[in-house]
Amino acid sequence: GENVEQHPSTLSVQEGDSAVIKCTYSDSASNYFPWYKQELGKGPQLIIDIRSNVGEKKDQRIAVTLNKTAKHFSLHITETQPEDSAVYFCAAPQPQRGYQKVTFGTGTKLQVIP
Amino acid sequence: DVKVTQSSRYLVKRTGEKVFLECVQDMDHENMFWYRQDPGLGLRLIYFSYDVKMKEKGDIPEGYSVSREKKERFSLILESASTNQTSMYLCASRGLDRGVGYTFGSGTRLTVV
Image 1 (cartoon, rainbow over the protein chains, first blue to last red):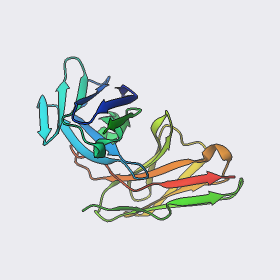
Image 2: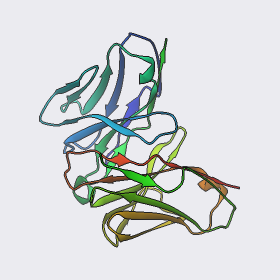
Image 3: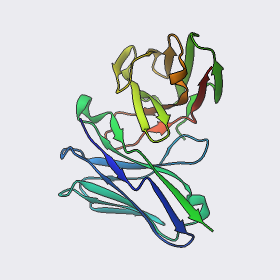
Image 4: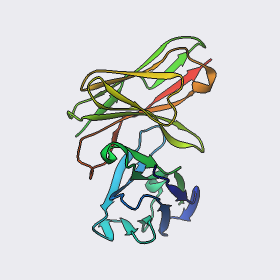
């Protein structure tokens, strides 16, 4: 099955700085990579995703990059704000049952210090 | 907006009780999931359903069962609750398109005493 590793587990940045979270995956056939943000007391929410036919995708202050050769993808948050403080999860599809399931990373707790 | 609704935000149950966690989605999604979230362990899949009455074990199914009698509803059952099942439980749904993410509910914080 798919193995997803996520680093770092915790990350503290000053407000206005950038934050980068990295994930690696094992199944070279995986083709869709979502990122989720989980705020305190809430369920995870999809914030950005990327398909394997592109190398980068941006949405305002967040971006995701994908390196298929190296089998890793990263979340980039620029000009961080206190409301970016949350736990972030990456995910990659599992090959069983037509990739309907995903494997999640173990999460990164991001703290943005005002 | 797609909505996934979990019936309870907080539950306290006694050891040995039978516990039902309910989840309803309103977007006609074929796939529904139950995850358990514990500190340091991330999200672990308990059970997955890809159609009505169809289910598949996830990574940690022991001590749990599920029921999906209607497409919109997916129930997680703890047959005999134990203290090690104290956790945050998250329900999610997803359509058949492989290129879309999950929609999660807000979670149920279950405490077994």
